[in-house]
Length: 81
Image 1 (cartoon, rainbow, N blue to C red):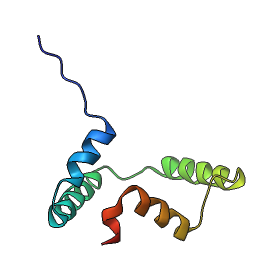
Image 2 (image 1 turned 45 degrees about the vertical axis):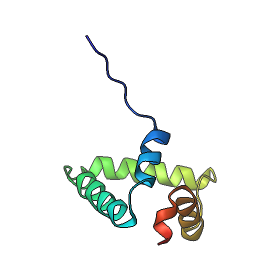
Image 3 (image 1 turned 30 degrees about the horizontal axis):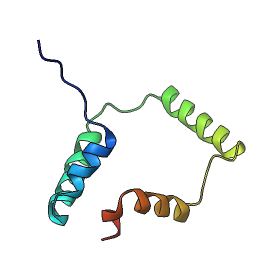
């Protein structure tokens, strides 16, 4: 029996970077659509997320929106286009 292994992040990233700009945008749109196919959050789940976010802020595990975009653009350079 043949076992399959999941590709690493670096392998997937490498494959994605070989795509044309237009194909990367199509992939991004496709992934975004798939990500949004989910059940709505329950009120308790929302409250849990807010509590977690507040705890992160108090602990200093946060950044400005500009810093967040800079980090994303460093990791995903095609977002700059």
